[in-house]
Image (cartoon, rainbow over all chains, first blue to last red; front, side, top):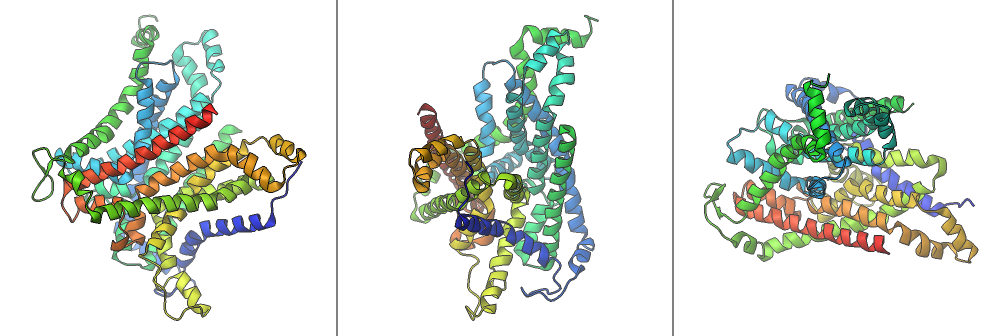
Length: 259
Length: 293
């Protein structure tokens, strides 16, 4: 029995979809607007994008954001996957504690996590810089990777692994040839989440970044605080493009693996 | 080959499975201990110490920072935070439930619509908050449209109001509400609805007595996923709210920044954590009650 949705409901939901996407679409549109101040459209320009290229600080922040996201994703994905593997194996003492503990960083307000790291670094007299940003990004994305990979592991058919062991493969071979390929989409999803979390993070980075380690979101924030200017629209459009390309690439890779 | 280190190591782990688990866990758990748990413990310690003259802390034990929180000035911030988080959750539920419902019944459009809901989640939160400024500011899009239509003559003060913060929070966290509700609606067995119809239930009562109760786990999960980040919000009230719409997150930052009262900032942090845990416990109870039913 097929059910038709009430037209009024569909229209209302359509409106919500428009509201959900309009702000960012307008932002991207305005990054091509010739007018500096007015909300009105005065003509198409690439001027604001050209201005971006003249700003070494923006290019530096963009490069640093990509480096931090790449390195922290690699470390967090490795450590998070190991935790997930341990939790999905045989039960062990302290398992519930570790598993529950994984959710603690996820529910802790970012401002609390950021401030507490800041005071730890201050207490230990560790200067804020790229190192502290990397450490923080790895720490906040690690639990997300572990949770995503663990979900995949628990939904996986373990009998294939057992079959490999029964057919004479040792644990390492069974892991490499059976478990890992089956787990790969989960690891990829976790890594993707870690990468975008790192690329987007403002709050925690704001507290643990030093003068020489400004990531793109921290720079954009300080630009917004100083005053609205069209260059920010252009940087924002670049950030949106960056995450969209990441997702598209990941979907592509994931699709090829799945095929 | 039996003598190679790798074989011996594997043999050791085969004998002691617990040791194998801990070998896998150690690097990650150590990382989270050092860079999440220890800092939190230090913060907790700071919250009961004396205030340092130039920021930082001075030795000694005191509960004064937690008592100070009872000052009407700060209780007002806490109350505002709580109602903004509750209002955000309520509005997200009001907007998100119909969205999830339509997606779950959308047939071949389902994946496209789902993608459209997830897309903003991948878009930088900072960029989306900034987009709200562009919409709401005096010379912004909404004011330009209102004046263009002749509805107002002078730009309205939309930005730096509690309404702006609420709009920013709802806009920011709506996908978190839609996805869990969609997941529970998608699992719903349509035969149940057919059975209800055959037994004479009309559409509104089918929704109220079958669909809605079965989607409550999704509603509870979505509410938690919206309520927790809304409670700890810092960026949204900072950019859209101005001084009069301070939330607890901003109070924390303020104490570690210009106000230079670290212990009080630490105490506010743990007050915030306390509310988060109450919300989590409430959700766990709801979930367990549903599992038992």
